[in-house]
Length: 402
Image (cartoon, rainbow, N blue to C red; front, side, top):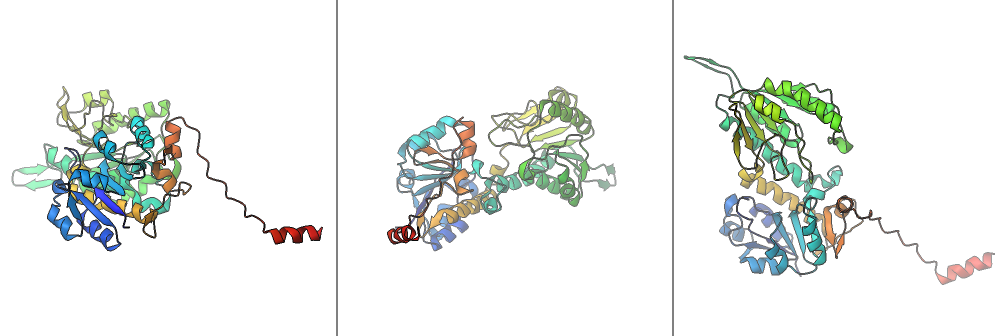
């Protein structure tokens, strides 16, 4: 019996869809059955007819849920969806396991297999094709650069006209990971003077390769796998103090520092925001219900300071480029499915270095050690390999040798 992958329509405000028609076509070719909830791809400009042409079956939500081997979503499904799921079914998506422990417990209680992209061990090379956080950050960084140019009250490039010369905008990107580098590249292509700031000195080469200036920092905090480690209170204060000067020298500040499952680091203090010149634009890519990089930012809203600076809560940028974001997300989902598919069956090796961490829950248990740590559960140890039994005739030979 074929593995059945179901895709659900996301809640209002989320424009992406978990599988694109191109990936559906590849899955069907590899003997998967794909069910698409009616209208699931409309906000990504993928109509039902396109999915049907790709080999999927368009169904209502109830059938998509009950007939699925695995349900692929972008965001955490609502309680009504989980209530309709059965033990043994799988769920894959951005499930917020590190911040919604009650949701995780509910999945475990129902014995639903949950694969949460936030838990993926991103430093393992085999996991790169599954890395949703990176693929969506790439989309978000590009889009936030465009949005910054659209929101800014002046030109981005230098413009020489009969009426005079307009100076180029000075753009500062705080955090030069995947999203930050995309924002730098986009702003440079639009003609701005761009600087990049990061607490990882190794980022200098990447920033300068894009034609931007790397701002020297007195705080160095490279962590495991090249990612930034969490700063101490003293380092945080030192970082915020040096950033005040950099922020005052720029017209547009794009902030991109995010930590899955934790509050984003505060890079732009209330003092820096309040003292910013009139017309200064802050684009906070980390804005969420957990907070943001800019003091006073609110997800999905634009806040104007008393001094006339604008703070845009730009936490949904990937959703604002839904077709491209969905296509990349779908390829990440496909990579996971390929990894756990063994001869037409989904096999979840909880001791595997990638799958074992990607799994939030399996067979009623909390699997990921990262999640277990957050839930204050003891670390799960890999099963000890069983020693092969010695055949009876070998035992006799051994006795004879004595």
